[in-house]
Image (cartoon, rainbow, N blue to C red; front, side, top):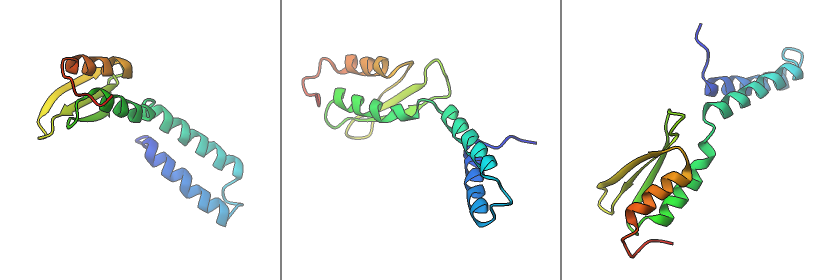
Length: 121
């Protein structure tokens, strides 16, 4: 039997809430709490850096020239979990980078644009 994904697990836990409310004797509150706690743990473990994407994006916007657009992502590689693609105003890819930290990735991109006078800082 396949193990359900973290998302499928969370959806199942949410469905149990309705079942518990409508029929409290079918699913106990203790069981519902246990399933919900496990679902939360699995979701958090599935992508521990997801909350960092907003910060990464904001930092890249700050160090890139006007008109350039950063796209950020998380990779499946734990050694370099952060990635970005920077495009110019026409949508042409200027650079693609991976890094093990937000600060490292921002520094790589900042270095690329240091010689340009117009940054958003």
